[in-house]
Length: 116
Image (tube, rainbow, N blue to C red; front, side):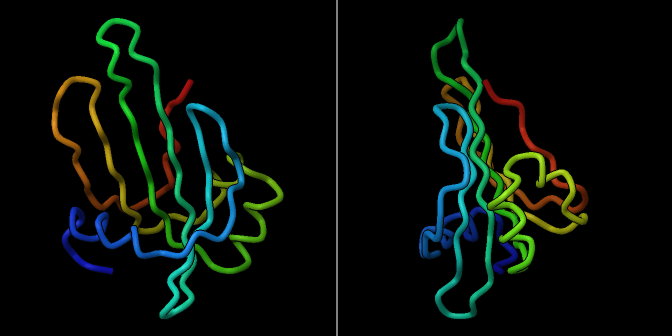
């Protein structure tokens, strides 16, 4: 992966979609894979309703996972994310205000953002 978090976020668009695990209006889990190397990723989408400003804050995570972890996520869903071993993963946050989105690397336990 690229060291620049914003650039890596752009590159994630080239990943192949594998499957949707959870598809709700404010939360989603999907599996993706790199066509070149086969590395798998789980993408997490979480959104909270902003009843005041109307622009809902959104969070995304892109977490590299093994084939076995991908299989486990397919049968368990959101709860399995907390059981993943700590690792480096990409996050993207879009604030509710007219602020710019921010991408950054995180190291450690997988934090599932709050969602409605």
